[in-house]
Amino acid sequence: MHDFPAGRFAVWSTAWLTGRSPYDDALDALLGDTAHRVSGLPGTTEAVPLGAALSALRALGEQRFRLVLPVPGDVRGLPPVPGLAPLALESGQAAVGQRVAFVPEALGPEMVEWTAFPLDGAPPVAPPVEGSLRAVSGELDLAVGDAARTLARLDVARWNPEVPALLAGLSKATAPGLPAGHDQLALSVLGRAQRLAAVLDLALADAPGAAVNHAQAARRDEALRPLADAVRHAITAAYNWVPR
Image (cartoon, rainbow, N blue to C red; front, side, top):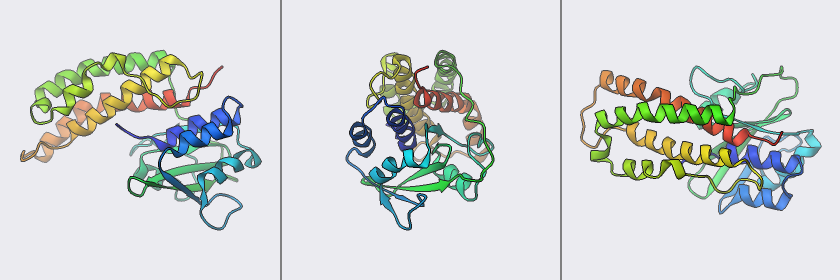
C-alpha cells in the first residue's frame, strides 16, 4: 500500500504539538520498524535522529505541520526556499510547518532520510487547498465511477489481478495508525485513497509485453487524471485534519 511518511509526520507532529498525543506515541508511530535521520535541521551541523528533530519542534516555535503533495505544475503549499520544490517534487511529498519543512527520501526498505529546510525569512505561503472531508469523499466517489469505466476499457484487470483485489471492499477501507480521536471520516477517506493510489500505479504502468505508444499512454494518463487529482486531494485533507 502507498506510504506517505510526510503525512504521518504532519499528523503525528501536530498531534504532539497540540497536546493530543504523548511524545512517545508520536515517535513510535513515526519510526515503526524503520530507521530515520534528519539533515539540515536548524541548529545542527550533521544528521540527527528523527526523535531529536521531533523534540526540537517546540523550541523552533512550530504549532502544526501540513502535508503537501506537489505535482508538476502545482506546488501550492511549498514555501519558495531554494531547493525545496525540486526535492519535494522528486519525493512527491513534504511536511510543511511555519519554521521548517521536511522532505523524506526512502533509502531502501529500512531507512528514511529527511531533509529539513529552514523557512526563516521565506515569504508566507498559503497552505495547500483543502476541501472538507465530506467534499473530498464525494469527489473520490465520483472519480472512482469514471475511473472504473476507464480501467475496464484498458483491460487492466486481465494482466494485473491485484487491481480487482484492491477495489474489492473499497467502501469499507480504513486507515490505521493515526492519532486517537482522528475523525472517522478522515480514516475512511485515507484508507480508500491509499488503495486507489496503488490502483493508479498499476493502471499507469504498461502491461507486460504490451506495445503502448506515447499517444496511447497520454490518452490513458489523461483519462485517469481526475482520479489521481481526487486521490491527492483526499490524502492531503485526511492527513491535515485537526479538531476544530
